[in-house]
Image (cartoon, rainbow, N blue to C red; front, top):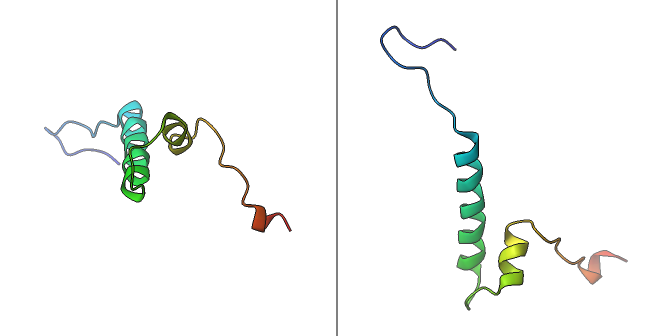
Length: 59
């Protein structure tokens, strides 16, 4: 997609977009919690550790 003459081309900062996405994940986790998130909960929200399997789903 070409930009109009005299207008700069759109800038996409992928690092900033990734940071915004991570921040959104933390906000969602905090919104669903009724307490201050522990480090493990933050790590899980950021995808640093996997979510434990739901025991009901393994059978």
